[in-house]
Length: 120
Image 1 (cartoon, rainbow, N blue to C red):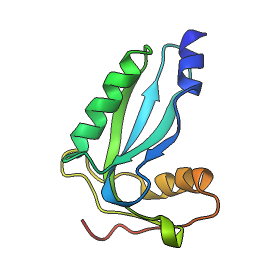
Image 2: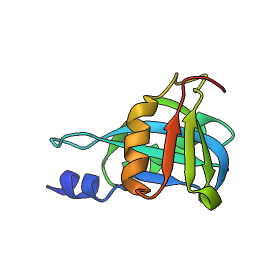
Image 3: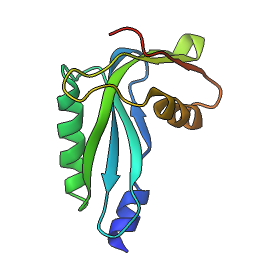
């Protein structure tokens, strides 16, 4: 039960309030509970692995583990209410941008959110 509560407490989307930055799509698991996929994107991360490692450390404190499903970039323009999902991670490969877009739409329902496989 603890793993389920910990998992449900993990926000699906945590990204910076604006700018262009790397993001990762992570699959979070707890013992005996269904997995949950989450999006993390921050400008402080020089590499996609930085996002993965910091999130993995935070989740481990709650008894959860995660794997990286891929990465890319986000261009977040809050003044235009737009987010564009694109690119890939050299280390982790390309995330499923369509899945990422669905998660962003749930978090930012009043935004125009687009994605493309082109670009780095």
